[in-house]
Image 1 (cartoon, rainbow, N blue to C red):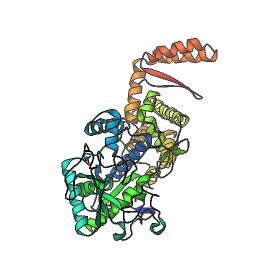
Image 2 (image 1 turned 180 degrees about the vertical axis):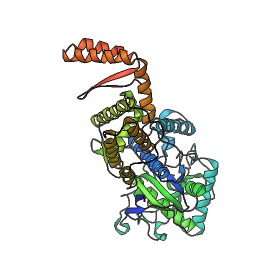
Image 3 (image 1 turned 45 degrees about the horizontal axis):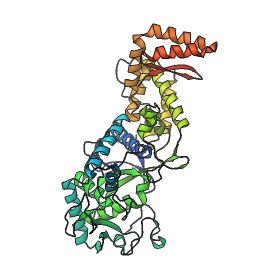
Image 4 (image 1 turned 60 degrees about the vertical axis):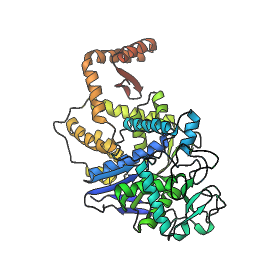
Length: 465
């Protein structure tokens, strides 16, 4: 069954085949570690994780790289403003290195909680060998005549690269400076971008290096190109990121990479859409971002958020609300409760439902895959047969269904008769509107490590965090 992915380069679904047989090179834009990742960032990382899982199910070995940006990403996402790392350091009274270390670990913790399988290769932009790689890449661009120097840095001349902005379908002729990035009177063209920025003469930066052009630090865009080329080669199979990366960051990566190597940078570009809150974009600059800890504080299982994200296609905007998350929590808890009552399969099933495979291979259509998944849950197959299918599908969903259902089954089994009697007594108390007694019984059940959730369909048990 052929895998089709929407390629931002061609603006259509293309059949995916890797350059090397059975091996995929995958570069996924990682976090800028000056603050916690917000739920919108995490949506993109979940999408990238699902992509990786789908590639593996299709029989591919995935060589993935995810960068950690710990220098050079300026506050306007362009060529001006303050380095986000230095801003974070000043905000918290720490060094930039301490900020990078703390928020890198916070990101790793979030990924673990969301069942995001992180790659073995996670290069840091500020590591010495990658700073050297970035400087060498800029040298190559300079030798080929793609650069010029201003008072604040070394810039890439976008007009010298054929088809600049093609992926983003930019109207270069009518693009006004300031529409994408802050104004800089020394830039030759609005779409030119910094490769190397000079340190301010009146103060010393925490993160700066010697270069052939002067003391400074790399531009944000050059980091990904240098690290991708160093770790994966001059041409990679798939490059991923958020939709906000398409018009500037990824457009600039393509230009500088292909100008330097003379080869196609990435054969596929995939982009995840925004997560919205109150119908507006969620983001740190907007001041409306929520973190995974925000959900934990309200007693939501992090995997509930993963389930919520899977309910929308990665190329569709998704509006976050607490009510929608609550509905996802109820659906997820119901699923775990059902699985806990099923017979465990005697062997692992590797045969996927054809409809399910067709859905995930159709540009990662997770909403359709989830619908097929629930169809199987509700079929008349034996519980063992259904569970085998469910656990196989969860290799893509990443919802820890086997682990969660087994935990619940174990807890229920340890006090099955007692809990069943308590639930029956509680249901009678609720029907008689004796809510005080119902709450007392709920508390007794909680002491046994289980929570009771009341739904229209009756009471559900779930594991207490």
